[in-house]
Length: 160
Image 1 (tube, rainbow, N blue to C red):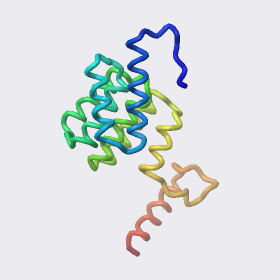
Image 2: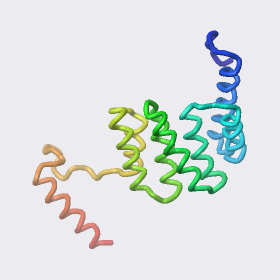
Image 3: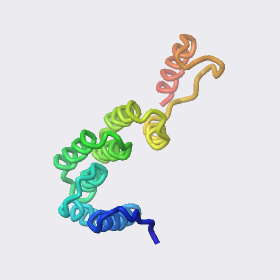
């Protein structure tokens, strides 16, 4: 049974339950159902930026409405920059629409606000894995590593 804060009003408890139901459907990949649930949550008056960001992401994933979904996620970032989830959802939207580089930029913006957030860091690593340093004992920015790294990259592209 979920924990409820006794100070929460009935409306807030209902929103929490509806969000839990939404998140379970989203996690299971039931995108149409999750989209309907999160839309209903917003219609019931939720002004939570996290809810708005998920609604924007689902607008793209379930309905293919990129313009509206992007507007919703960007608005959620403006309203709720205090929560890394809004940055994560905007980045997922960019990945879903084929803008991987923009997704990484969004995650880096999130890290400026939430430095060291493990979820944002993991997502950046997943989207833009770096090759290991050529000379492990030297810093990545060391001139020797930079020159040798560029050379190795060019050699590998010639092989392919």
